[in-house]
Structures are given as C-alpha cells and as structure tokens.
Image 1 (cartoon, rainbow, N blue to C red):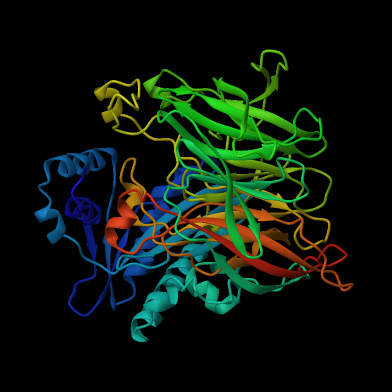
Image 2 (image 1 turned 135 degrees about the vertical axis):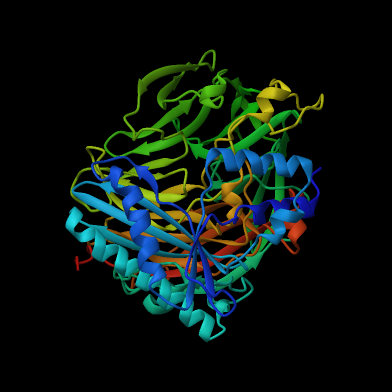
Length: 578
C-alpha cells in the first residue's frame, strides 16, 4: 500500500518551475503555465510553440502576476515515478509555489481552430475553463490576448474578494438538487468559458427539482449502475455492480430495497453495465463488460424476478456494449484485448458483433467508422441539430467532449471537462496475488499505461423538442491527471447538454456530489403530471463518499445510491438558434 504523504508530495512535484517571468514574488499571484497540448492535429498544429510564447508574454504584462513556465515531458514524468518509489520527496514539496495552474490545449476544427485553457486552483476547488474559436491565423493574437485577460480578471477578482469558495463544491445535501446554469456565476465556476457563455434557458424547457433521496451505506464499492425492466413486470429495476458482484434494487415508496444478487469469481473485474434487447424477443438482458486477468471475460445475464440472476452467456472474449445507432437500431458492439505492450493491451478498433443463439459465441462484423483512437465506451451517435445526419460525440483522453459531423470533421470542443472516471480496461494494476492473477509480468505491470474508461455517455430527448440531449457525468479534475495511472477526484456531478446554435450548452447539472460519481442512469420514462406537459424524470447516481484525504486516494469499499426527482416542463418544437 502506498503511503499517503508520498502520494501528496508526488502531486506537488509536478509544479517544479523552469522559467520565470516577472520579478517580485512576495505580494504577487503566482500562476504556473503548462505548454499548449495539440489534441487534434491539423493545419495549425505547427503553431503551438509560438502560441505558448504568446500566452506567456501576454500574461507577463500584468505586473501583479508572477508567471512560471513549467513542462511535464516524458523524462520528468519518469523522474516523478522514481521519486514516488524512492519516497525522497521532501525537496519536491519545498518547490511548490503558486495558487493556480494553467493547462492550455488546441484543437483543429473544421474551418478553424479552438484554444482551450483550464485554470486549476492548486488549493483545491473546481477548474475554471475558457475557450476561444478562430477562423484563421490572423485572429490568433487577439484570441490569446483575450484568454490572458480572462485569466487575469478571474484570478484578480477571486483573490481580491477572498472568494475561492465560488469554485468549490456545493453541498449535495441541498434540496435544490439540480442547478440550472446562470451565465455569470457559472462562468466563474467553469461551467462555461470565454465566448461560449450563454444564458441558462436554452431549449425552451424548464427544470424543477423535487429533492434527492439517498440509500443507506452499501457494503460494496460500486463500479457501474444501470436501470431497466429486466423481468417484464412494468417497473424499472436498479442494477449495480462491484468488480465481481451484481445487486438488483427496487425503488419503491422512496426507498431502495435489495431484491436479487449474483456473484462472479473474485477474479472478475467488471467495468460497465448496460441493458438491451438485441434478440428482439421482448425481454431485456443485462450486458456486463469485464475482464478476468488479462483476458476479456464479459457476460450476458437475464432475470426472471427470483432472488438470483440467470446466466445467458459467460466468458465472452470481447468487451461489449449495446449501442443504438440512428437509422439502424440497437446493435451489439465490442473491442478485444491485445497481448502487445505497445497497444497497452487493448486492440484498436470497435466492431459490430452478432451472437450465435445456440453456442452463445460472438462473431465479429463490420468495423465501425470512428475518430482515430476512439475506444468502445468513448462515444455515442445522435442527430444533435436535427439536420437528418448523425453526429458522433466523443470523450477524449483529456476528458474533453468533442462533436464530429457525419463526415468525422471535428466541429465542436467543450471548454469544461467531462467523463472523468477511475475505471480502466484490463486487469488490476499492480495486483499479483493468486486470486486475481493479472497474467502480466512485473515488468509489464511497471511499464503499463492504463486506458481509462470515461463515465457513461447517454442521449435522450429530455426537453421534448424532438432533438436528443447529451447526459454525462463529470468528476472534478485534479493535478493527479499528470501522474501515470493515477486519478483522484474531489467531487462530481451529472450534467445535461443540448445543441444550441453552433455547439452544446448545459441545460442543467446536479449540485455538487461529494466524493466520486461512479456511474449514473437517467430514467426518462416517468409518468406525466398534468396536461401542461410536465413530466417527472428520475436520475440515479452511484456515489463513492469521501470524507478525508485518504478516502479520495485509496479505494472505498462503501457506496451510496442517490435518486434525484426532477419535474420537466417540455416543449413542443425545436428551439430557435441564436
């Protein structure tokens, strides 16, 4: 087990400065700036170094800021790992300086480029995001100047008002439950950024919370959650899993009740649950994506209402997921493991699958056309703008939300982070005991790079305007993202975004949920309240509570289930574009 102080000091080591702008430090706000990361190659990718220097120069003009240019190249990351193992981090802790970290990135879009900046408070709290879109090179200087001004105004205001609490987590005990975006306030919290600030009443629908219900403490670490009617009794069941156990709950009279269970071998490592009726027999089944050691070992289960689930297929050598494709319906898709270290033990490519009803085996079909590097759980398809062509929505490795058009041209990138998760493909990292043999050598484990699985990405027409909205989770990004194979989060939420004009904007998000949002499921099949189109929807959330720094870093063995009740007044037509 790693020692907690060593982990904390490891994070501090990341902030070692390399180049200093401005002179007097004692009374200045200190901001560390990382280089621009080119996340999508394109015609402007070669400009990243020039834009780096431009941003540093613009920020250094503000006399009351001290700007530190820092780098985190492969050699420095490797040194960090060695420092972790050696435990010699006292010197690293002494080098920590600054109140803020700026993480810039650039994306090449169809017909232009987008610059994103994340302003991360090093004392804790939610990252603030800014963005600027440009159509040609002539607009770069103005865009960078605008971003630098945004940073200066934000840190100056928050410092002068002593109001860092504006970006810290909200108490999830509040009855409000859901927060409809407010442009100025949420800009400072990082919901919107830069030119993307839009008022919070897009889509035409209104959202009103009825409150939040919580389960008692579950003696398991929930990895995944889904809801659906598995036994055809007309009621939605809530299915949750730990790494090797399945539990089914009902939610009646505002209470969670355990009604069924199923245990796999302790060597099983579940990372996703989904429900589908892919054989079109009218009965839905539970699709479990998992591995056992180094091999994919997924399963399909049914449930007849008894105290245990029934096996349909097990030991499937694919990671699996049912997916609804516009114009095609629901299909089973999958991705396979790899034995190659250079592929991080995950074979590239996502394929359509068919299942032999007699043997239960899966047969590979067509390879799906997706943006390069997209994995099984990274994407959804939906016609977001109602033009009759489906867009592809992707969460990338940097936890940004990307939208590609039907020709796979990148047309929109979020400024905020979404989809942060601790789940990953493959066996437990650095586990070598006999119960959970990884099948990897110690050398392979030491050099392994985990491929993380983003939080659930879903589409539903919540507003009733005929266009699907995107629902997804968001866990607060910390500087642990720069450590290899390490992710810690300080609270999260679930958000709903809809297409408005030329991009996605948030229609609502839950208030801050402490700890870690392991998974969620939005149930839009609720009863109508009255003739005015008011509908009650329910959002289920699996929460891993955190009450101390130890809880935020080490795995928790307890969880809670949350049920949000939300009244939606729907609209009857598509929203007007701005």
